[in-house]
Each structure stands twice: as C-alpha cells, then as structure tokens.
Image 1 (cartoon, rainbow, N blue to C red):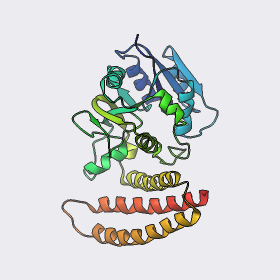
Image 2 (cartoon, rainbow, N blue to C red):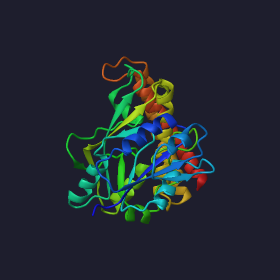
Image 3 (cartoon, one colour):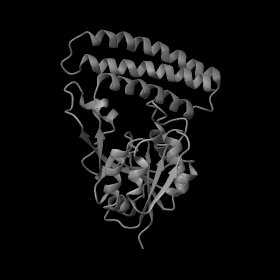
Length: 307
C-alpha cells in the first residue's frame, strides 16, 4: 500500500496563484495524499478558490504569525508519513509526488529531506541587468543535472519534502526565521537542513522533482533585489545567532567587533568596485553584496539585543 503523503500549502492573499497551484496538485499520478491549506488570514478571493476543490484540509489562521508558524501548524495537522511543501505561487508536474516518493524509497542511505529543480515563470521579460548568481534570490533553483546528495547547497521551501517523524522531532521550522509580514526574513529552511546534516542525515536533490515558480514583475526591480539582499544578510546573522545560542554575550560582542572590521574592508572594496568598470561583474552586483553585508551587521545587533 502506498504511504500517505501530506502536502502543505501556506497562502495569504494570493488567490489567483493558489488556484493554479491546487489545480496542479489535483492532477498527481500518485494517489494516496492529502492537501493541507494554511490560510491566513486572507482577505481576497482565497476562500472562494478553496471552495472549488474537494477534500482539502483547511486551517484558517486568525492572525498573520509568519510563514514558519503557518508551516508548523500544517505539520501538526499532517497525517502522512512524508510531508511535502510547495508555495502557493508554484505549480507542480503531475508526477511531483510520485518522484518524491520514488526517491525516498530507492536512495540509500535514505535521505531525510528531498527537493528538486525550481524553474521560473517570468511574468515580464527578465531584466538584462539581472545576473545568473542573483536569480536564486527569486526562488529559482538548478543545482545539478543529475541527482546528488547535498553538501554545500540548500533546497528551497517551495519544493521540498521531509520524513515526518524527524521533522516533528526537530520541532519544525524556527519561528524566529522565515517571512513575517512585509519583511523578507528567510533561512528557516537553511537552518533545518543544517541541523539535519549535523545529525548525520542527508538532504537530496533530484532535478526531475520539478516545480515552476511565478516571478511577479514587482520583484524584477533593482529596489526589490536590494531589499532581498539586505534581508538575506539579516537572516544569515539571526541564523548564526541561533546556532551560537550557547555562547556568552561577550563572545557574541567579540564576533560583532570582528565583523565590523571585516565589513569596513569589504565596504571600501565594494564602493571602489561599484564605480569601476568590470566586464565580469556589474556595479549593481557589488552594490547587492554591500547591501547584504549591511543587513548582516543589522542582524548581528538584533541577535545581540535578543540575547
């Protein structure tokens, strides 16, 4: 008998995308699965979209507590042995769940976390200034042409699945990280993959576990990309603060001082490069890196204040 798979979709005011997502999930070749919608609390046509689809398990949030909180609510409600995640603005292939389960069942040693390729659905022409190394911040992923155990790379939450018992034993996703309101806080997915690997388990990438992800035109501006880099810096610092939670306040202060020294050198170098012509890298590339460093510094201060 096929194992039960729980697919969790967290949504908030994205009815037009959610409908496409649910349509793709209802066309799966794998049949033993449940769909859990964590809605919350949407004020657009989301409720009407949900009503169009049968056999959904629906969790309506009374307040917006962040993406990690929504995912954790879904995990608590899940009955499946495997828990899959997809964003409400993504579309699966018909064999998405089937390929996830085949990977869990055939790869040795069995991985705990599995994911795959994320292709962009551009809602406007890709800007010429957008470099290849910047595309990942739009939740686009193409790590390898062949299936591999991940060592230095990370899966993205719009296309990943976990063995439920391990995921629950880890307490789900850190609610100190992940999208909250209008912020672009992230790294909840990175943190849990780091913890999984530190415990001696594997994360696995398979390019044929494929989803396509909408890239709205609002995100294809330099302003949004810089905001994304800024919040990535903050996210990295907060995640490192969580991992270093056992360290003393003085130790953390020394880390901040060391970072300030390093950042000053990087700032001076990047400011110089921004105004220099570089055939390989644009000035905007270095501006993004500079913005990320500034975000990291802000995140270090936030992490120190939390302590």
